[in-house]
Image 1 (cartoon, helix red, strand yellow):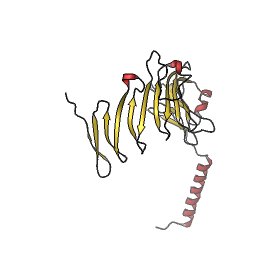
Image 2 (cartoon, helix red, strand yellow):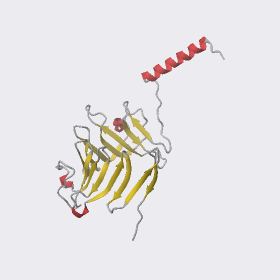
Image 3 (tube, helix red, strand yellow):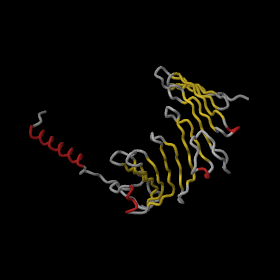
Length: 249
């Protein structure tokens, strides 16, 4: 079948015009609210800015939503806060999440925050309630290779403003008991060898799991009671069998 030169030229012209419109940003498609639809908002760099959950009772009001806040100009891709709350009215993607309150109310119930070191590694994570008080705080410490060495759930709110330098150390205990500290060791391939829980908490401290590897393949896992699980792979390194320990009296 022959295609005429005129038809070919017309098709080429339409393609060029359509591409130009896309590149210029003139073509846009607005989102609309619908039952069971979860809407996501992104920046021009592809960073997630918000999530809007569907309306649960069909009255087209009050949507559970999350709004993401990112770092300063030197760290534009690191999220520093996630605000969770109630968006009174549906707003389409022509309105930036940072401007939501210019059009409707966004009642924030909790804020999850993140703090980073000079290498962009997370060193603190906290949750604030509606009163702005930190209700939960976790701290992270890294080894010389940049791998998580310890993570600590600090249980005493009185120490939140003056944390110890290392997450591997217990802080002053309060009424909630000792900190929940987990410590990791790694092999030369940066694979987790041991996961130790209850670090610094006396009799609660134990090696929760011990792993062995063959190259990059996990071969065995032994829990704190000495129960060992063995993993078998096929010739393509796909998991084929898992031999679980048998409980005996």
